Length: 311
Image 1 (cartoon, rainbow, N blue to C red):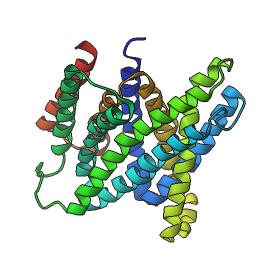
Image 2 (image 1 turned 135 degrees about the horizontal axis):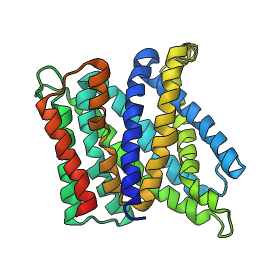
Image 3 (image 1 turned 180 degrees about the horizontal axis):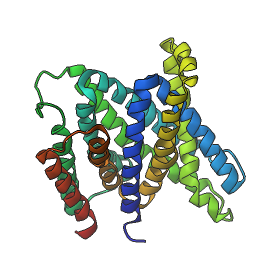
């Protein structure tokens, strides 16, 4: 199917729009670190049940040490490092500029894909990427009361934002390498459903490693007491559950499927549309007015997406 990877990437962007929405609600309710631990514990549970139902095993069958190594590295880089930087950048520069810094992810994925996988992009794809990123940047920069990017942004906040975008972009490429080793380890006579569920099995590996990583960070920060308190919060757990469904369970799994069929840089760019897509529900629910710059940014982003398919 032509453009399957690109289509999956757009579905991921929609899923991550819901994920971002519930991540904000869960983090405000029970804490960001606690939310990360809970979502990955739930993701491990959900994905294990899914694999058990579909392939008859609750764990990633046929995954060799190379698959575990590369997918584990992707979890450390993307989940632990990337998400740790992202949530802490919010505290220093706010979610609006934090999301803006995440537009670094697509070019970082393209660079990492070129270095580690030998992927290349045509000048048309690069142009489409730049147009899409410009639209995303316009939409996010226009948010806020004064709609201005001040020059007195804390350096630490900027570095954390860069770290978040880099972690997501490089983590995606590491995942693609890990899935390549995983696919190679699957026997030729294995059931076709095993290949179909490979992205979900890969996400399970990433969730397990990410869960361990965040649990260690939370333990070092003496946050186990707050974790126990968070688990007893019904509303917080509801938000964390919805975050898990749209985030690791659906969004991340489909993102790994997308990079099997599309260039990592292109896929990452389309997935980065989530901050633009969230403008509409944010306006309807929180009664925020849509500004002219946001509308122009959305139109520019849509133009960039169309270029991926038409050029």
